[in-house]
Length: 273
Image (cartoon, rainbow, N blue to C red; front, top):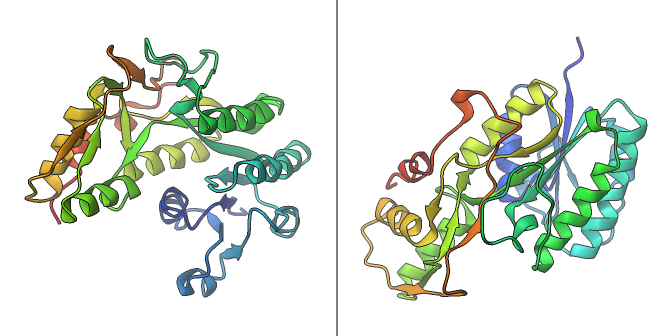
C-alpha cells in the first residue's frame, strides 16, 4: 500500500521542522525551506520556497501530497495568497489540509477561555491574519481540512525559551504578563497530537494546548528555574488591571487521554541541559 505523502509548508521553521522529524519515519514526508542551509539543500525531501516570490502550485503538482500541513511564517499578505493554492489543490484532489492557527484568533475576547466552536475575533494583526486563512479553509468540505489552534509554544529549543536565555545571559529583563491567563504546549506534545490526527484522518477544529490554565508570570518563572541556575531580572508588564485570558481549550474535539497534558507537564519537560 502506498505510503501517505505529506508536505509541510514551512518545514524549516521551529514547528515545521519538529513536525517533519515526528512524521518522517512513518510517512513519505517532504518540507519547504526558505533560508538555504546545507542540511536542507542536501536533503532530497526539502524544496526551496520563497513565500514572496515563488508559487507553491508547482510543488503541489509534482509531489501530489495526500496531506498538506501549513506551518508557514513570513509576510502576511504573501501568506494569504500562498494558502489559496493548497486550498484549491485540496478541494480538487484526494488530499487534506492541516493549518496551524493560533490562540490569537480570540485575542479580542479576554474575559474567558475559548473553545472550538466559539466565534473568532481578534484585535491583533497576527490574529486577523490567522482568521483570514481559517475562513478560507472553512469553505472547503469539512472532511478535507483541519484547523489546529495552538497556544504559546515552549520547549528547550523553542525561540521563546532561547530568547529568554539570551536576555538573562545579557542581564536584560524578561517580560512577564502577570494578568495574562493562558494554556501552553511544547513542540513534542504538539507534534505527537498532529501525528495522531493525520494517522486517524481527523478533520475539523482542534485546540491543541494544555487542558488547564496558568498565569504567564508563574509559568515563565518556573520554566526559568528549570532551564538554568539564573537569577533573572523580571519585568512585569501590565496591559490591563484585570485578568485577561488567551487560552484555547478543547471541548467538542477531545484527543485520547494519552495525548492530553497539563501545563505542569510542559514545565517538567524543561530539564536543565
